[in-house]
Amino acid sequence: MKLLLINSTDKNAFAALSENGNTKVVFASEFSDTTIKPGKAPDKLIHCLDKLSVENNFENIEAIAVAAGPGSFTGIRVGLSLAKGLAFGLEKKLIPINNFELTFARLNEIQTDLTYCIIIEAKLPEYYFAVYQNGEITPKGSDTLENLIKTLQNDTIIVGDFDDETQLKHCYFEYINVKNLKNEADSFGKLAEEKFKCGELVDSAKAEPLYLKDFNFKRV
Image (tube, rainbow, N blue to C red; front, side):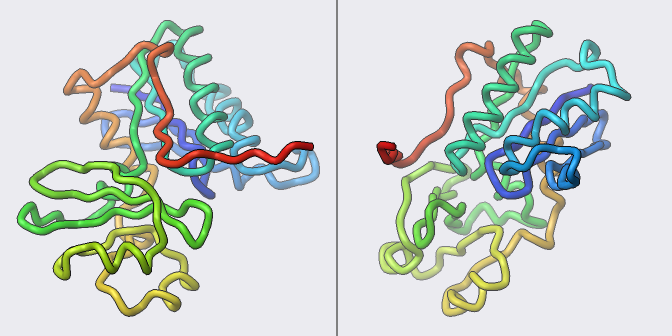
């Protein structure tokens, strides 16, 4: 099984090929020299795909997995647009993956009798959050960590990809940091393979972004 992976919803934007459990990944951060036009990580995603296509024939992939959010508004749009264009041109199906699933999949162990709250950075101090309970992940919305702590049950475990600064600011609650657990690209590939086997594929025109809040745009 060979799948093309596209994730441009967070700071570590990448494209990758996953084949039988092995993932070959190209990060947008690799394209920072003067030969590449400056821009945000999602803008460089096309260079990741170009590099992969030089050594791999995209005609041979079986589907395209794409991160559908939540996350960066620009990143979501860029990733989905590229994935839809490739899927249409190659006549392949899409496998939408939301970032709550991806973050949760990076845990080394999941105890089904526990309640987890998965959080993803939004516009700080807010985080997108979803609750894992009874074997299901349910997206809820966005809020500050302080407000979340007040509403969650005492035994709920928070799961997120925290940087060091966030850990220092919010060391008073129980949490699991996935940053140094399972690799993000490998977890993305494994999750995509599982969804492919379960038949969770959609036509490119039907893939929708996962937004959990309204975006306000400034007029120029």
